[in-house]
Amino acid sequence: MLQPKLNLRVSQRQVLTPGLVQMVSVLALNKLELKEMMNTEMVENPVLEELDEIAMSLDERSGLEGDRERSAEDVAAESERAEKEEKDPFDEIDFGSYFQEYLDPGYKTASNFEEYDKPSFEHFLAQPSTLTDHLAWQLGALTVSPGVRIAAELVVGNLNENGYLTATDEELAEVLLPGAGVAGEHVLAEGEFQAERALVLADVVTARELVNYLDPVGVGTRDLRECLLVQIASHRKEAELELRRREARRAGQVASRGEEAENLEEYGAAHEVMERRNGPIRVVPSRDGASAEAPGPVDVFAVAATIVEKFLSLLQKKDMRELTRSCGCGTEDVQAAVDFIRTLDPRPGQRYNQGETRLIEPDVAFVKRDGVYVVLMNEEDLPTLRLNQGYRKMLREKQTEKEVKEYVKERYKSAIQLLRNIEQRKNTIVRTCEVIVRRQQEFLERGEQGLKPMMIKEVAEELGVHPSTVSRAVANKYVHTSQGVYELRFFFSEGVGGPEGGDLPLVLLKRKVKQMIEGEDARKPWTDDQLAALLQKEGIQVTRRTVAKYREDLQIPSTHQRRVR
Image (tube, rainbow, N blue to C red; front, side, top):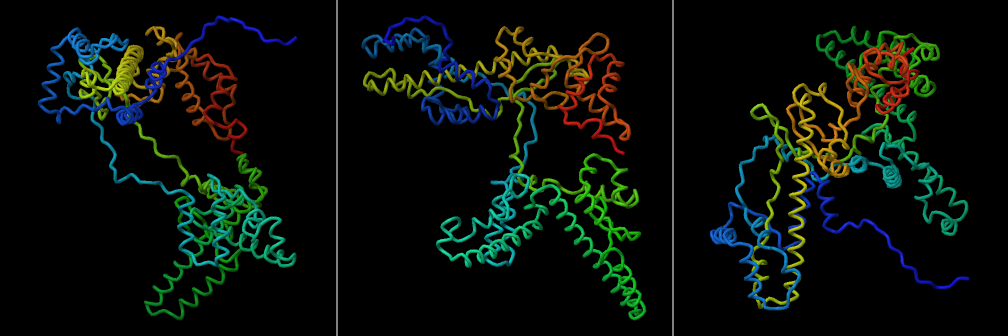
């Protein structure tokens, strides 16, 4: 039977206090994020303020000198005499040591961190231009009918990050119809509705074709094949116009020498012969975007369009032999068409949809002094926080209201906890970096070839902390070394059995696999078994499955896909 009961259960569970949560979050911040957090805390907490040694008044300096001379016992005694109220647990905190530590600016040495050439603000944009903005700006400069303009704006609004159109013409037309959906049939008669729908659909098709040839060419298409075909057609038109301009300039130069009739007749005959070939004008695109007259009747643009439209799968497989046979052209002509296709952009919208530039500023530096590498924290531009003395006086004054005093106490607790966590963050990062320096001496001297395997767990055991603490200490943080700027996580890598009984870091092994594949014969690429055998000959103990996994991590195609036939 169901009946209410009272049960007593004893259990242990880990509860993170607000101070511990803040310590964990502060440890994971890099320098730029820490600076932003400190500025936010100064706005929200009136007890915190930034120490400006240049702007400090004489009264403040004398007050700081007096605070340094007074002991913690004097501060506690004065507070007890001033209030004469019931004992508050808050008063048991030794604020004398806190104030002496955080109010005293101490001696600040000059920054030993290396000076960097900071980027000019002239190269920054207030707001980067998106693909939608770029296309809308071009549409505004065109003279088109209102219906086509509205349809073009709708097409632009339905493009994905790669620049492809994600909606069909019918779906776009339904949006533009007056009273779209069932309501439209009530607004217009059946015949009028179908006629209006046909007009709107025609506007959508016209708008889509218009957007296809805006910059970047190929946006508004629905798949890779259509995108490449539009770009081929655009390049063909540009090449034909350029060739006609060259012929016109040649005719003008000949006419200026007084040979108008004879040479113009030759020009017309040559132009007629050229148009009799497999199209109006035949040009060959070059890798640098320029165009030249074709030596023969083969139109490279036509060959490229045929490959994209009918034999795109063969192109993806790099099967040049079958591609040449299918196109019915010479090997050189097909190769020229393939080289031209490689210059096209399969994702034209990506160039305007790139992520925001991420600013990287090293949090720490490994500097060699007197033959020894030392760890230096980069605290440049970080605000120096201190506790406001005015609020400290409010705690001593008897006439201060109790609510105000309680608020100031809470703010002081929060401020002191923040200062402690910032100091703890600095100590943890410095200790972790000191271990990295001791273990990676060869890297600092020789470069990446001297990198040794190192696990986060090993560093945590040496420091006597949890591995998650070390993981947060190196997360999203960078270090400036004599070999360049590296992410701190770069130094942590698994080891693979290497030559002479040593371990080879996973980073170097992946790089070695990539170099071997880049240097292979394209007609006879290495298989995973062959790569594993070659590595084993060098003393690196890996299996075929391991090599395949590393190759997939590097996004390198398989042997069959890399082979050029």
